[in-house]
Length: 428
Image (cartoon, rainbow, N blue to C red; front, side, top):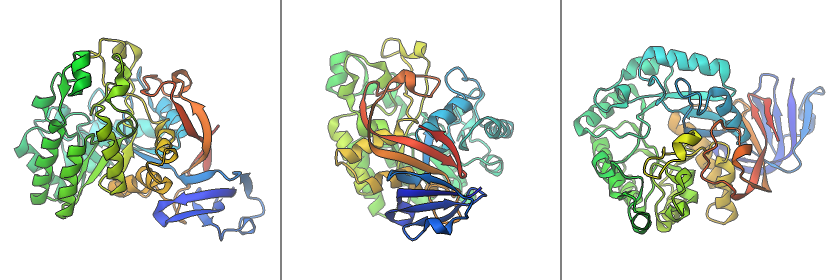
């Protein structure tokens, strides 16, 4: 049955649209017509009418980095709970990480994860496979076979390929196969045993810190290799001003690659850790306020392309430990959009820029037909109220794990509805 969404502000950076209009969804769940020229009379007489009361419609969000607990860590998260959390946050497409148990580094695991995801998930899933077998950084996994089976890209998640010779072979091979490599940039020797940004806060808390040079060294190395072996290369998350300088220099030299940043690094800094708040133990770590502001500037200058949730569910036991021993990561898929909107409300970024980093930019990097409301595309749509105030309460979040880094934070902007292939799958 056809649907018409009326009285809605449509923001779609892929078409450079920001206008009040209507959206018609055909019976196949595709966008039939959109914009201010679309009239209610263009819809069929039997079309279901939904008045959106001036709220905003954007393409369904594409989150390029989230962990799902299946298989092996179902007690932290599973496809069903991940889907619920994602849809409550307007996220309709997710790139899932391969650090499951067993690791996704072979064809049978890929078949399992795609089949299981299709049966249980209510969102579009794009699984990543490990760059190296068992995420050990020694032996390359079978890129060709895995890509054929539906793998969207390759990542060793929060581990870095340390061996330069191996990295050059990976890039060379990825270049032949036109496959995406997503690198976590952190030198292992400089970062081992550390759990926080190096500096005054680390000294005060008596914790071992890691300097941003650990990130910069890997970025410099990889971008040097990239000039020799031009493949589709993406830096998963950067966290520092010094990394941005390297990125800016290489981009101006014509080297092509893309860069992501976690919403946590855009919204929090090391001072938020306070007295050992383990829910803020993240990788890369929260850095200084100057670093945070420079990351926002990096988005403005198009040096950073994508904002990710870096959704990492952890059970309570693994977080309620001394800071150095606590697990790393926080959930964030449900709060990704509202927390990003904070950057609009405090005048750090334009609405169009934020939405671009959450929709069409990741879709282009992944080469998937998402992140747009163009005529004929899947009607994956997020509807939100830009002004609605609310407070983050962990127990009300849909994720199975409750390790949010922003407990009790006051936010402005809430998802009201999420459509997937034209079906209303979430209503607040």
